[in-house]
Amino acid sequence: MAEKILVVEDEPSLQETLVYNLEKQGYQTEAAGDGRTALEAARRLKPDLIVLDIMLPELDGFEVTKILRKEMTVPILMLTARDDEIDRVVGLEVGADDYLTKPFSMRELMARVKAQLRRTQLLRDEMEKIKESDTSALPETLRFETLVINQARREVTLDGQVLALKPQEYELLLFFAQHKRQMLSREFILERVWGWEYVGDSRTVDVHVRWLRQKIEQEPADPKRIVTVRGGGYRFEG
Image (cartoon, rainbow, N blue to C red; front, side):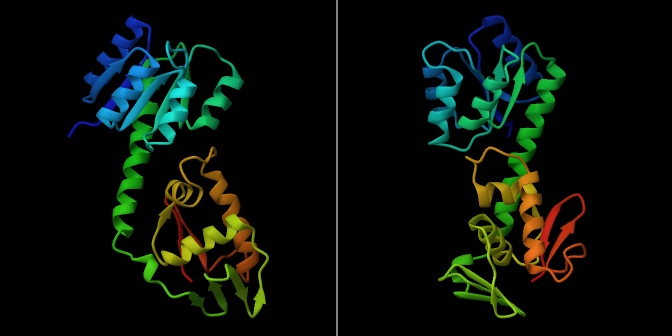
């Protein structure tokens, strides 16, 4: 089934051009010319991606994004007519996944669209893979030799010593432990541990993995517990 894309653009000729090129690539498209219509269309269509202009009648792209982020996790590619860093930062802060500054080439737009849809499919695939894992059935205490995670106390010990973990380090380690020996992509970890609302990229995961390794690995430079899967992500060996 063709992936559904909602195009929100108030300039008729650009809207028509976007719809034409997206349909040419095989996507099912619908268009809206203002913010309120965009919200109605998104709720009804439940698109796989929204291409959203910032400058819109009724409600601007920032407001539309803020409202949608409370209701759905659809990827949003934001379009801006101004090469203004503040616009880009605000767009990302309210929940946009990517942005393009006008004028842009159709080739670049299609590359961004494909990247967002590919990321979404990757997350769906990984969720399906671990759906059968009932993490709620895991014991209160997870033991991996001398590494012990006490879920009730939110406490981690190594060789009997309590580790000083930051909250996000604990959440990341627990997530790894709940999915032992499963390859987890950076994007999937970011979505599940940090959440869709987080504004950042996969390097955030790398930084936190490095911090964790310094605390739980005997040789952080040669990790045995959290191993890197080349071209994929990470796998927790316990």
